[in-house]
Amino acid sequence: SVKMAIKVAYILSKIIHKTDDFIPTENRNSMVHALIESCGLLKHLCLVANRQATDSELELFHSPEYLQYMKKYNDAIECDDSFGFGYDCPLKQGIYNYCKEVAGASISAAKMLCSGQFQVAINWLGGWHHAKRADAAGYCYVNDCVLAILQLRTAYARVLYIDLDLHHGDGVQDAFCGTNKVMTFSIHKHEPGFFPGTGSLSDTGFGKGFRYSVNIPLKDGITDTPFVEICSKVLNEVKIKFDPLAVVIQAGADGLNEDPMRSFNLTPVGLSDCVQFILKWNLPTLILGGGGYNEANVARCWTKITADVLNEELPCEIPENQYFPSYGPSFDFEVVEGLKKDRNSKEYLKSITNTVIDNLSK
Ligand SMILES: O=C(CCc1ccccc1NC(=O)c1cccc(C(F)(F)F)c1)NO
Ligand SMILES: [Zn+2]
Image 1 (cartoon, rainbow, N blue to C red):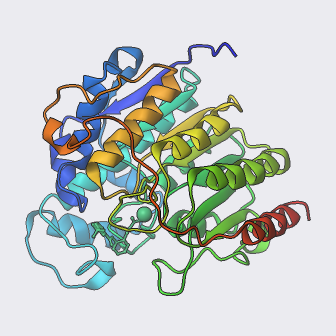
Image 2: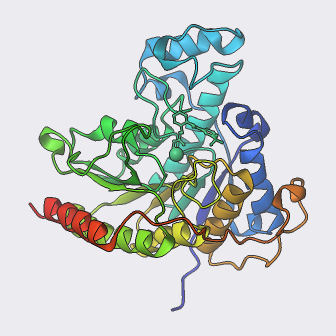
């Protein structure tokens, strides 16, 4: 089918190398951008210079005390473990500037969609779905997903949030679990003791938001085909029932095979097929990053998603770029599917699909 060329906004950060200091993999954000650039994709994108979020924009979701604490430690180098900082979310110098940069990028991307000038906006620096109003969690210090959704809600009556990360998008679900203006859909690993532990089948929202939280809890080992199948089946019902006017996709890549999380068995093809299924709806769509700890594979995945959004071909081999050695020994774009067992039986997938679709039609 002939695909129309669509206008795609891509948020550029001048301090992208600094943002690498605050995610667990040292060069990831820089590698993603360098690979996208070396594949010649920037000329097809509308490059938007990032603008840092203001304090008042961050306060649209986060508590002033929480933000004040980060601001205070922005220059210091030690902290106690209040507000969730400490072990999982170490506070480092420049943390507050990092939050303003990342949140600003997701808000800027959302503003591009609100202007009606773009159909898709991409911010690979964003996707930090665990952060709470006054609590850092799971390496997330600022919930840029929530801030972007709030921005989109100024122009769109109903916004759908879709979380493809290995982990449950708990911070976003919590923020909107009581409203029927934002539906949150998250497909993730759900096993005893696996972070964050929420997002079970019965986790469907409260009050006005009852049945506006959709969760697909999975076991280890799922591969592209069943993942894309369950996503498209359920999202098809979500589209009919909720009739969203804008979409936010968190495309966290820690579900890829060879990720240190060693859980799912996805490849960039599966994640990109999910994004393509959603883009067929022709709705204003914001695409964010998220988890993903095999940095070369995350760069391969998000470069492929960017190329597929643009309907542009990728070269067969990894082009020369600053991080070329990281792509050895294959030096190509493929992430092979592993041999691990898929613990999601057909019966299990069928039963959760039916339950979720049942919930949607009540
Ligand atoms: O990816 C996440 C957060 C993962 C997380 C939650 C709670 C506590 C720690 C983490 N992060 C890790 O476990 C982690 C982060 C970076 C790298 C690794 C590695 F060891 F797998 F490489 C592991 N959310 O989408
Ligand atoms: Zn994750």
